[in-house]
Length: 341
Image 1: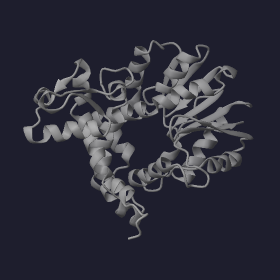
Image 2 (image 1 turned 180 degrees about the horizontal axis):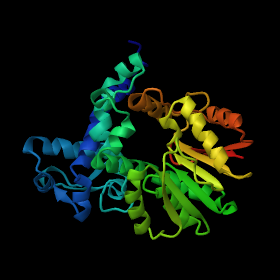
Image 3 (image 1 turned 120 degrees about the horizontal axis):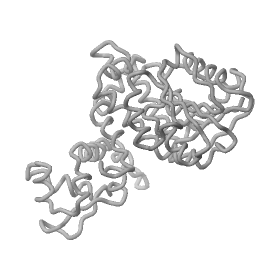
């Protein structure tokens, strides 16, 4: 083997699921929430979490080595504590908790990704549909616990993007917003607090409404956010100056993507804007690995659904009648693709 070549990156990626499962299991065990009260030794923390003596040190120290825990001291007297990031984002008591997505990754997607090869060979989803024969949304919305897990996962996943969007997009030019597939109305709450002149319609299927209204009330946004129930394929979208879609278009095949874009166009006035928050793949398809992996996740979840590039978005929206476009970078690999009527 030539001396300048190093297999390290290959092995790091090949064993990446080890590190992933350690973090996901820590979230499952509420480890970061337990440490909200302060630092604990391995024996103290292991006792609270009811872990066997054999795995405690390896588990906790792996989290230290991975950068998800900090430890003061060595040996049995060493005390473990949250990092600033895990304390903020993976502690259930924190208002910025995003653990819903890791929870869903652990309980659903971790196992489904074991069948990526089958998905690539067949083009068919590898999730609950293989067992129940139902579309993923039909299965999720039929079970209250699964539905709420899904809604909270999507909420935490997008919080950072919605906050940046509220700062970067010119909402001051508009008065009304319809958030399509609004889930727990997080986009409406975040953007609404930053722009108090706006009013919102958070549009989603009927089983979501009770959960969404609870979150709107907790945010103190009653009167400004209307939770509207409907099916965005069967019903017209509520008319508004801005239509937003947070990780909605990537759930569908090309035909249905175009249907949703056309419905947004019909709901907007002249000068209105369609804003789609997604992990947009770069046009050359060389850089945004997360966007490409998310598109593979859509294959596993739906079969014919896929993520897309900014150029794809512009082409579909031009076909629908939109005239002007821009891409707004958001958090990490995410962007807002904007089309103006």
